[in-house]
Amino acid sequence: MTTRPLTQDDPLDDFTHRRINLLGHDRLVYTMGSGPAVVVMTEMPGISPHVARFARWVRDAGFTVYMPHIFGKDGAVPRMPGALFTILGGCISRQFRAFQANESSPATQWLRALAALAHQECGGKGVGAIGMCFTGNFALSMMLEPSVLAPVLSQPSLPLNDAAGMHIHPDELAAVKARMEAEDLTVLAYRFEGDKYCQAARFAAYQDALGDRFIGRVLADEHANPDSPMKNPHSVVTIHLIDRAGQPTVQARDEILDFFRMRLSG
Image (cartoon, rainbow, N blue to C red; front, top):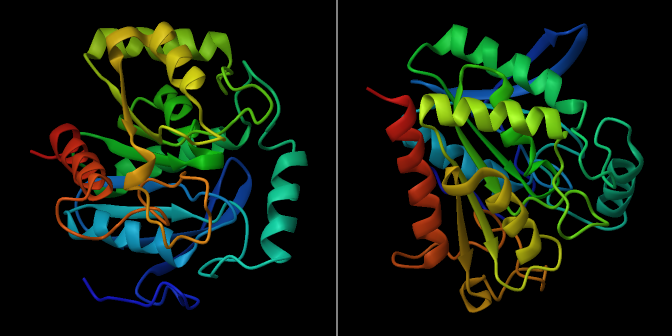
């Protein structure tokens, strides 16, 4: 993989820039690679160089990446005050319902449609999906789309005001659980032990709801990148990943890629 500086804006020029219209809404989606599709949903405040790096790892593992613009300035290194304005905008947006437990984000409807399109275009057994931070819970709601077989929740942070809250409507959660039982599917989830935005209570709630269909991984805070500008240990596969062999964050990344291979390839 071509190494790009993580401290400079990423032009995303190795991605194909596509305008995709679904459900009456036109959005920019960055695609690359070949093989079964994986929808990569960015963390706040947008598609940073670290998020783009993760997408390239997915591409190099043998998948077609679909990375939609959701918020923020695509490719930009997070900077204040712009990043703060993006976060505040996300918090008040009706598309995300950031403070509502037991509710699903309306944004997931378009993302489910994107997954269906990606499966149609790429074939294979199905589609993978990973959400991070603000979008972390979205990957579970996307399982209402039958093509989504490999959901990953990386530090799911919504709802912001309820540490034990689940950002999915109870009816949708019940439908997802029934599907997982019927098709023998699982969901992977990751968080750092001391993360203020994704606490133990949230993983416990998902465990109670989904039982052994929920596979939660908790990393020690000491394994978060100490050089990250964000001191709260949070972003498992992006800004807090330490890109060295044997590091727990790299092992988490590789487990995610193996999960996609197991569910989608062959």
